[in-house]
Length: 390
Image (cartoon, rainbow, N blue to C red; front, top):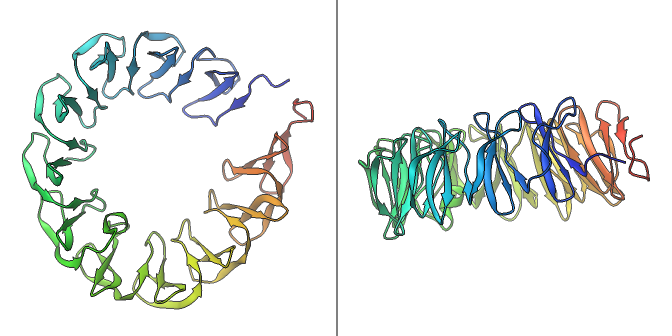
């Protein structure tokens, strides 16, 4: 009989395991590290893992010893030796020994990023440093946090940007400000939009239309952003230069060598320099992942490579994006794995399939699991009908 009901992949030398409704961790030799007695065990951060049991939270060290007692209602992940904790309905911060460093005075609190954390008091949000000093008073309806050197904020339904000491980079007057990607943030004001840098300087003028849903598709990614002029979509670079002419009804993401484009009802592809390879070929086309883009005609999925060549003709009922150079595919016979050329590496005969890494796939059929080597399709391990390994 299997020792555990489930085992997750190893992270940092340990793997999360479960037995019944309890979880713990084991090391690579199979020895238990965190005892299997908790409701939840979070991934270790700074050598410490938050654990929960019966509505109480604490933390264990790398050896599984309890270093923060189970006396808190909530404990976050540690950053620079501090984690938020909740006690008697209020949040403060503790160190890795469970000692209170910043008193319990907040209705919510976030993890420290770059030495700063977002806290909430009386329904408003501000920022404190690792000593508990207030760097931004609690006066905003929302504060993003300082994963970067600046943070987006919301006040009275409008968005702005501040620095770590509350200095105003952009006033809170804009309808939308996207995340900073490639050093730029999409900013929408009324019916127009453009891009600013982290100092608030306008890099791409507000010459583009704030079309419906622009906040979902208009961010700068991989040096390119979808934009709209006179009702037509195109693409610009980080300096605002047009790299794909404004002649399309829709444009996909530019994460690879090719960009999905649609002029009328069907999709094709253009390269990142704006050269259109072909249009009106597929009912749907997705952006490239690891040099492969999925496509769909009728209800069947296929794929093209970075040259636009169809490497898998649309024939699968489902086809996932590549993971470690392989794609999970589903046909009428079941689910399996194909490689980047379309070659079947795991037969399409399983109920569930997951590519674990570049060498191994996990398969399940009739609630029995197995692990298959992708190089030759041979089983590394599988359960028998009794649940024992074979």
